[in-house]
Image (tube, rainbow, N blue to C red):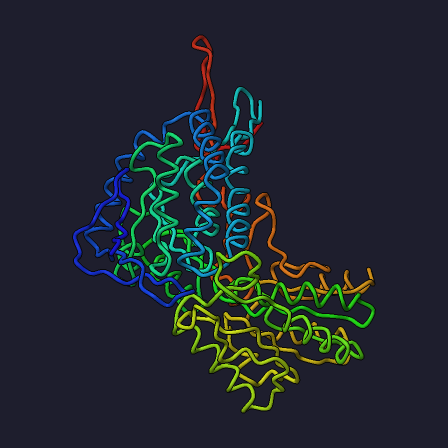
Length: 498
C-alpha cells in the first residue's frame, strides 16, 4: 500500500505521528493509499524549516523570484496531464475538468511572474523642505494555507505563488482526501529552483489545523472551506495575532428571465450545476426561473440533465465523475429524498445510479428538483453535489430579494438579453462575484476572488491585488539629508510640512 508523506525542507518526510488515513479511488470505491497525518510536532518541524528559509528567501532579488515562477509555470504546462490524472484518481473529477483547474491555477502563477512591476513603491519628492517620502512592501514571514478537497491544485495555487513571489515561505495543509497533488507541486517547485524550506506540505486533520492556527511563528493563514470551519479558522487565528483569509460556503443562484435564450441558459446552467459533480464553491445550485420562463426552462433542463454522461473521470467522454467519498454520495441521495418528502418535485432522479464495472464507486446521477421553496432543506443547505433546485418567482425584483435574503453571497448569474435588467441586477444583488450570461463567474487572476456575507469571513478576498496586500505589509520612509554647514533647529511642536 502506497504511503503519502509530508514534504518538509525539500524532502519527503514520514513525520513523527503514527496516524494515517486511507485515500480512496472514488470511481472504484477502493482504497489506493494511506496518507500520514501530522501532529503539532510535525507542524513545528515545517515551521522551523520555513523560518530558516525565510532568512535568505526574503532577501532574494525580484529577478530570482521571478525566474523561479517562470520555471514553475512552464513545469505546470509540461506536467499538466500527469497532475490532472493524479487529481482525477483521488478526487473523482474528469481529467478534462482537472486540466481546467490546473489552467486556472496557473493563471495566478503568471500573475506572480509580473510582481516586479506590481510591487513597485511610490516616491514623493520635496514633501517639505529637504524631505522626501517613499514606501515599499515587505513579506510577512512564514504563512500557511489550509485548502479543500474540491480543487486540490487550483485553490492552493491561488495562495502560494503570490505568497512566495512576495518573499514569504509557505506551509500548505491540503485536504487529506486527495493529498497527492500537493506533493507533486512541491516537486515541481524544487525542479524550478525554489530553495528548500520555502514550500512545505503538511497532511492531516484537525490537530494539524489547530497547530497551524496557534503556532506563534506563522504570521498569516489562508483558508477555503465550509462557513462553520471558516468562522472557526478566523476566530482562532486572529485570536493568536495572525492575518486571515477565510472563504466559506455558498448557495449560488442563476436567474433566468423570459427574454433569455433558454437553450443557451439551460446548457450553461446544466454544466455549472453538474460539472465536477457539483463539488464546487461556485457551482450553480439554484436556478431562479422568472415569470413564464419557468415551464420552458424546466423542460430543457430536464432533457439536458438526462443527457449528462456519468462515469469514471479517466474515461474519454465522461462529463461527470463520482463524488469524493461514500459519505458524500449517501448525503446527496438522502437530500433528494428529503426534498421529495418536503414537497419538491423530483424531475430527474439521480439516486441509485450504478456504472458498469464500477458498481462500488461513489456515483450518483444529476438530480433536478422543481417547485423548491426557501424553507426546504434543498434550498437552505449547501449540498455540494449534483442537485439543481428550481425556485420560481414572478419578477426580477423578487429574484433579487431571494438572493439578498440568502445567508451566502459567493457567486450569482443572470441570463437575459436586457442590458437594463443586467445593470439593475449587478447593482442590487449583495454578492461578491456576478456573471451576466456567465454561469460560473470566477474572476481572472488579476482580480480578486471572494464573496459577501457568510461566504467570506472577515474582509480579505484571495489572489490578485488583494493577495499581494494580504501577504505583505507596507513601510513608509521619510528622509532628510541635511547639509553639514547648515544649522537646523528641531521644533517641539508636532511636525508639519513647509
